[in-house]
Image 1 (cartoon, rainbow, N blue to C red):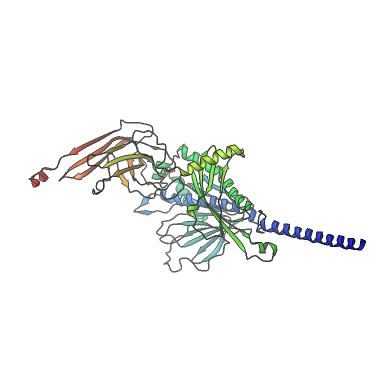
Image 2 (cartoon, rainbow, N blue to C red; image 1 turned 90 degrees about the horizontal axis):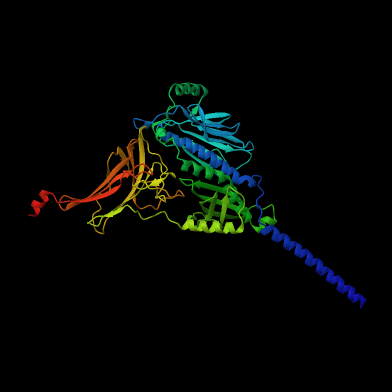
Length: 534
């Protein structure tokens, strides 16, 4: 009996040991395969979001520099060389900024952390070289650019770099690339004829000479910068509010992927024209369960992606939610995310729930509103004036013909129209609706005091997508002294009579009413038409 008991106890002990070993193995397997921490052993994985954030800052400075060419006066329909506005890259500091008239533009200067080292490569038809220290680049006539490429490459093994490219007959381009940098094997414009023109790299002698020229001229700015140099407080406020949370947004998106077991591999965030909304795209990857067990394997990667819409709610809080309508990439998994990002501390559960509900409501709210300034003529044609805004409409205030502020933005147009120093440009949105079957003629109004006008197009919504605005709009140029205008439409022809509507005393000054009124009248048929009928 004792022998059988000892045998039974021994068998039970072995069973318990096997069960314990099996339990530990199963727990280990579950831990390895399901654990939601970082899945890739990459020394740069923890600061991937910051690298992309810094790349976005660099690209923003480059874009500001590229936009500066639009402020250069036209010389016989062409853009003249700029000898006072430079893009400056210092790989030693490291930093990047815009220098204008010998002064650093503090609003366009970005200093990188010293831990993020960069190298600037320069490619020309004659060969490649590395530009060290401080380098200045200038704009030239877009039709006479020497073929040049610049690559601002992050060192320390990071897989990010910025490419700035110039070519004959093209404007400058730049982009922050999410893969490791390799110098292209072939030259992009090797089949293009190479003109004997100066490089966009500014030498020290040329810089000193141009600086002397700039100092001898009054730094009054170009026609465009005089007209639009003043940034409205609302635009400056929107920009400051966005920049205050931009880095936190990048890091939070990375954290959201990390919580689901993915390492961030790519992220792109593009703010809208008014910086009150944005869109983002992020991609990540993690190892499959076999690769987690066998560390020598690195082939079974599982990918994920997410497209996001970002909206400002107020009180420093931004609502971020997945946007399934933007899915454009093949991936193993699309993530469904919803979270808040704020410049302040953490929210309580109740407050967080309230703000999320507010964000969901804002995401459903459209931009269209019925216009109170609408008139329908006897022939059934309806004309409505929607609103007025200074160009560019990049978050600036919209108002009605009586000067009253609109409670919404019909559309955004972030491009600045050239104007002379004594001119102002306005966005004016309107709409004309014809009855079914009636020829659509006479839809464009005539404006009193208008110097010239520019056709519409290029409209965006707050996210930077194509605007759903279905009305009509143009950019009208007035002398700065002009405070009001009259918009007049005439419909019909001389044979059947004409109907006209005039929106008189339309205010070009927000908050000020100059006695706006609507006037309609009917023009009888002409005498020749009457005699033909009789």
